[in-house]
Image (tube, rainbow, N blue to C red):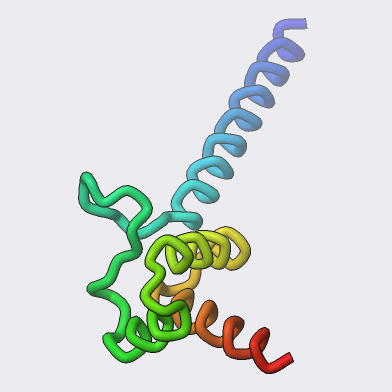
Length: 100
C-alpha cells in the first residue's frame, strides 16, 4: 500500500514538472518584441526599413491610425514574424486589394 502511494505521488510530481515545462516553453516561444514604456501599440520604427515605412504611409496617405490598425491585425494573424515583415505584408495586401 505504501508503494502505491509513493508511485502515485511520484506520478503527480512528474505530471506537474511536464506541465510546468510545457508552459515555460510556450511562454518563451511566443515572445513579443520589448517596447519602451509609453509607446503603447506603436510599431517599432527602428526595426523597419525607411523605404518600407514610406511605401506603406504613402499607400495610406499618411493615415497613421489605419496603419497601426492594419499592422496589429497582421501581427495577430501571423505571430512570430519580424516587424519589417508586417509592414511589407500590409503594404503588399493593400496593393493587391487595390488591383482587384
